[in-house]
Length: 74
Image: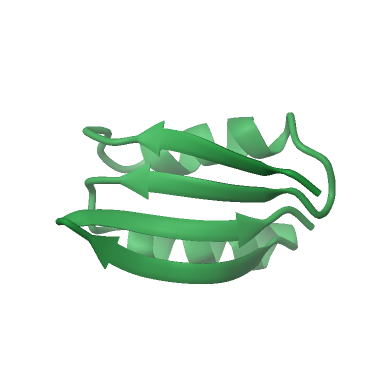
């Protein structure tokens, strides 16, 4: 298992989800991806995408006005 960070700041829907999907395709099962965004819509969109695609959301939080989602590749 390894950790990765995706900078999806200043991207509007649906680009953060698309970039997350593209990044996950390059990762292994069990890898952890931290997605950093400025679009508040990701707080619903990325967890929904994870449920559909078999990934697990480990954490969601707001840090200094940015939205952070941590997911485990399934």
